[in-house]
Length: 494
Image (cartoon, rainbow, N blue to C red; front, side, top):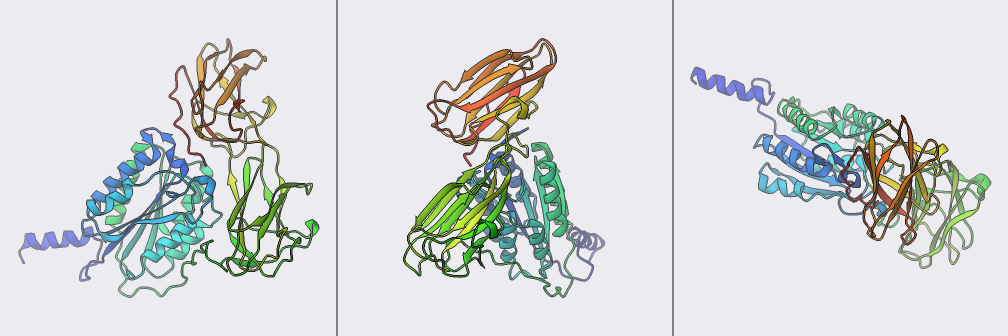
């Protein structure tokens, strides 16, 4: 071998981070791309999902041509209101890194549903079966935290410790501090690295750094370590007799706390007109969803009830024949312990009848609470666009406030997620002086408050509510700026 050939060969070995004398390990990269509803939000550089498609397409093209690539997503198929925590999809299985094979899966993404990070990591770990002893890497892109009540840190640790030489790298896109903390934990537990990206340019930089890490990833040892744990199988709610057995209390006083985001079935037959009593802590701004699914083995009905802290019935359905969702919204300062009763009005409930309790964080303006219904509980915001806000029958009014500088002119816009929705707006200053009002000119349209100005620095309060002829419940987006702001994109109806 000539001297130049020897140098080239050594360089190739260095590029793959393989020790001299050892054959290069196959590199397998699985991309998990967040396709939840919040990926429709706007950031600097475009909509999050459009930016992700562009940057990740470039990342795929930059990866070694001999790498095996897979693309997985979550939240693509079902809208947020379906609360489908099983909405996970392997868009492209492992195979050669050819753009015509891999990129269609990336380009097919469309923001829709939930964020089951833990379950997606568990499913992704299974995709590496048969690749033990190779160079296995997951790259997770998420714009938020787990909202299916899984434990993504534990899932990442199980995957990393499963004896398949797997590392989990994470990119957080335009995330809040508490979301960043969880995603950092996922990367640490998965033996990888966390990258923070606030906008399109930073996402491109993060992807470039991820590529360098993939290319330089160390080869596995010659003998893979024995598995210390295996991924927990993910349970599908539609399969009968799945879910953990549980027994509730016999009354409100003996109600058993029930974990959220987990599928259960009663460990006994519950006679007609009797209930198992469970309790769940709820915060104002959250939505409580109870999903009851009737099993196939026994004829009859399923049923459930949601009651408030005073034991008053809020929602009830006693004759579920297939699958039913009971939904209760909670407004600002409606924190407390609420109750879920499992039992039917018309027949016994059996062990193959399943139920699940979920909490949706329907907070306003990227905060951790719901906007109040008056100025004393107004939610303070800064200029910007906020796509996820919520109104319902129990929280029909939301008041926001912002600190206005004297002499400057501001504009406030709001757009309903529902095509049959319309928005009413009104604004006052600290002195109670009316600064104007506005409504959607037609259903589904933007309502605009123009020329909001004050002579001195003070707060301006904006009240948002659905119009008289509109549905009273649903999500909406808002935008605040000076003096002209872009209308918020139609927010995904969660």
